[in-house]
Amino acid sequence: MKTTLDWQGKMAFKGENPSGHEVTMDAAPEVGGENTGPRPMELLLQSVAGCTAIDIVSILTKMRMKPTSFTTEVEGERAEDHPRKFTKLHIHYILEGDLDESKVVRAIKLSKDQYCSVSHTLSAEITASYTLNGVKGKENV
Image (cartoon, rainbow, N blue to C red; front, side, top):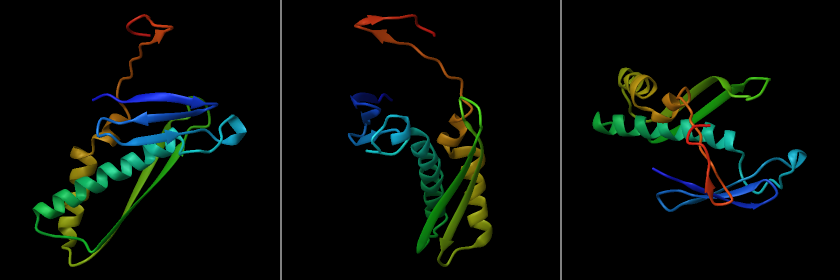
């Protein structure tokens, strides 16, 4: 999987995803942005919510249950010092419908403990490389 970001000026970047969708990210005006899109950390929080919600709907569907309403709320606490990563996440699921509570709990646990690749990626090893003015730099920075 690969995505690209193209600088749009100031602090804004437009990304095109492998699925063909575009997302513009920007910074807050107080740090040089123009607020033309969400912040990367906001998107990360939404990605956790989306990943786990999709898991749960998929699991419940396999259990032959379908919510009539489903909202996922994610609250994240960030470290005060840089890199200001998320130190705690709390996910709250709000479901409605004719659903067996034990099966809902099972679906949530399966997503949380096994399936949600986004939340499990947050502790992944990070490597970096770069190309500057058309010249590829060191492989592992």
